Image (cartoon, rainbow, N blue to C red; front, side, top):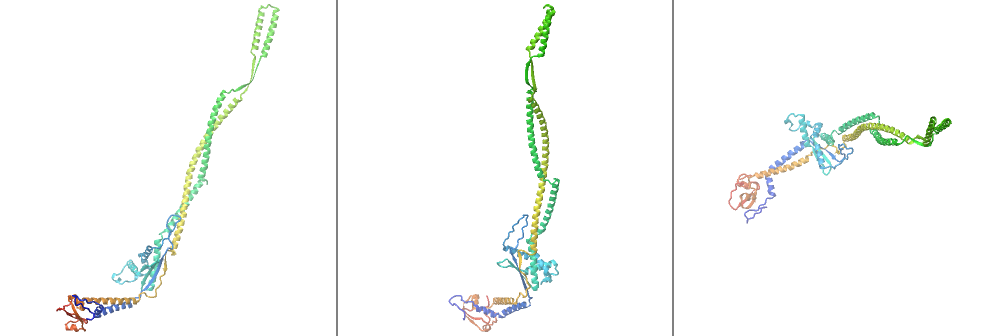
Amino acid sequence: MSNHEFNLGTDKPTLPFNAKDVLAAAFRYKRTALLCFFGILTGVILVAVFQPAQYRASTKFLVGEGRVDPVVTTEANVVSQVKPVTEEDLNSEIELLRSPDVLSQVVVACGLDLHKGRLDFLRGNLTKDRRIARASERLAKDLKVETVKKSDLIEVNYVSTEPQEAAQVLRVLADAYLQKHVAVHSPPGQFQFFAQETDRYQKDLGDAEAQLKQFSQQQDGVSPQFSRDITLQKLSEFRASLQQTQQEIASTSERIKTLEKQAGVTPERITTATRESDDAQVLQSLKATMTQLQLKKTELLTKYQPTYPLVQEVDKEIHDTQASIASEEAKPLKEQTTDRNATYAWINEELAKAKADYSGLQAKATATQESIAKYETMSHDLEQKGITEQDLLRTVKADEENYLLYLRKREQARMSEALDRTRILNVSIAEQPSVPTMPSNSPLPLIAGGIFLGLVVAGAAVFLKEYLDPSFRTPAEVADELNIPVLAAVPQGANSYASSNGNHNGNGNGFGRDDDYSVAETSSVTSTGRL
């Protein structure tokens, strides 16, 4: 009962299963284990020896914050913002590397579509597009693209049986990827757009300047706004003059009325001297007549009686003459000296002058109103021309600003495309692919893997045969399967116990095998194999 413990006081024994049992099973099926192990190892060695040499080429891309493309906008000044490289940026660049169009370019440039696959003979003749598509799929599987931890580097590996081809594939891939990066991150047709807009605004600027020049020539080189200002100044002066003339007309009219009123009450002449005197010539004539009558009366009285009619007639004449003398002496002659009235003359003169001024002021007012109307028309016309000139100036200024703006934008776009063409990008090749000199598929890892696989397969085969074998080999199996206590287990020599019971190699009833045990039972039991 070596290495086996039995508890006789209990219903079930305590029979541990140890490493010796495992080794015993391995030795029982050592032929199967050796065949599996050496068969797999031989196959792996043959594969390692006869497999073609594979060469691994690698390259690395650095995604940095070098240059950010300018924003396409109409603003004159654009502030470019640089953002740090994120994991999303790296993943985006990886997807660009693995994009179908990039892989197609690599396939066509390197002739990968001409390589024959293992199953291509079953598919028959494929079209060129189908060959390129299948070669692109194979290339996508063969390319190993991954980011380097804690860095902004992207590493690309490619394995090929030809070292030159491995390096060439990565070189073409790098060129195609950089072109794809430029096409994706640069606005398409940016330079052409700004060039077209620049030419268009240059033409518009030339047309606007020509229109402005023609308009200036029509105005004799004088700005309508300047002429309008002068015209408005003249118009203001004429309006002030008209207002003043109307005031003078009103004042002159009132003066004429006053002068006419004064002329009606002012005498034309005035007395300058007054003198009273007798009419000496009449009195003298009357006195001479009186003397003659008195002499005649005296002469008649000498001849005739006072009652004589001739004498009475002379007396009557004397009496009349005396009455005439007395009447002349009672009414002396008044002599007045008159002269032209200066006030009346001044009034007439001022009245005539005022009437003349009134007529002149009316004519002046009429002419001033005509001038005002003319200048108003001119000012309106110049106002419209000034608006037209302002529109032309604004058009010229706007076209000039747009032309200069798009000229700067065109230069920026030209510089951007020039930088793109010279590969001044925020993605650069950090490690150029080189032609590998040593194969990457060493046979040692494959042989080591074959040894491990052989051991696993051999163990699995032993376990499977052990599991499928219906024989009892340990007391534990007897106790478990038959559910009876085991009193003792005695190891036997090779085939001794099995031959005495008519069993060989576990075939038939019993425990058969080289290391079977003899078991003494507490009751008579016939073993018929696994129940």
